[in-house]
Amino acid sequence: MNKPTAGSAARATSQKSFGRRGFLYGLGALGVALTVPGCAKEQAGQSAKPAGSAGAVVEHAYGKTTVPPNPQRIVALGQTDIDVLVALGVPPVAVGVFSGDWYSPLHPWNKAAFTRTPDFLDFEEYSIEKILALKPDLITGVMGGMTKKEYDKLSSICPVVAQPKGFTDWNTPLEQQTGMLALALGKADKGKALVDGITGQVKTALAANPGFAGLSVAIAECWGDTFKVIGPATPRSKFFTNLGFTTLPELDALVGSGYSADISAEKLSLIGAADLVLWTTDGGKVEALKKNPVVAGLTSTKEGRSLWSTGMKHDSAFWSMDWGTVLSLPYALEHVIPQIKAAIDGSADTKVTDFSS
Image (cartoon, rainbow, N blue to C red; front, side):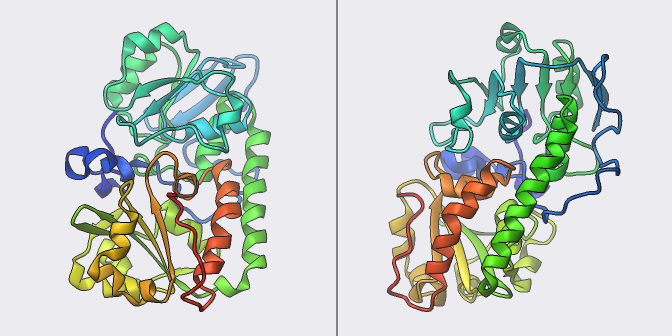
């Protein structure tokens, strides 16, 4: 797989730049407001032809793929495809992973579906021989960025459903990802029900928390000596804006159309002006970040209006926001909203849980 880049609205720039957390930006970002498309409309990136005796025809970036009926041995090379496949009742036999012990595709919302741990395939150097040995009947890369060359090579093994047309690689919206995979499995109705269900849960959470409306949020990161601000189209940002928060125009302008942008320590006051800040840093570095003189001096930090997370595999609250799937979002709503309330309650003394602990 091509290494995702921040410039293409994906997650990571380079492991060389940020050590083992370098792939933090490489999520197939699900950064889109949750809206339920009409069931009679054909969505971008998926064919309107349903599954039949000859299987389903799914349109994607490299053409159309006919998927035989009832695939069971699925290799998921799209980062968050695992969640949709689990939700549709067909856990994959193998999943793509980023290298390093910081990352895992298994989380509280999906791991119970596996009676055995699926095989892991490195996104950077996946082995064709290993994939052949798995005897897959379908390979998915919907939340990914496979090249045409990779698609052609993988298609010599079995049918492949790549990322959709019309979206940046590693940036397939929730509706399209769920719809494409549901169509491939002959479960389009169930896919629509899953999207309807999570959309309803988000709307319920929005209605239950009117105090969030209009408050500003900033999504920030610190890797070593580098500070970053995350753009409004990313899944983490969308998690908050779908709950009524707004992003700050000055920070949005800094990011532009990208996934994220570096921000100097001198400009961190722009982040500190937000009503709520979500910080993410490397494992074991949260306390150091809190004590950083510039960060500690921000209004948001002094008034207790910050949430603290890492991108480590055990930080499930972070990943639930960052993945933004039909399975992970309910976990995020349950575990993150109470901490949001604590952070914005107006008291600097209120204990806000460190997600990474």
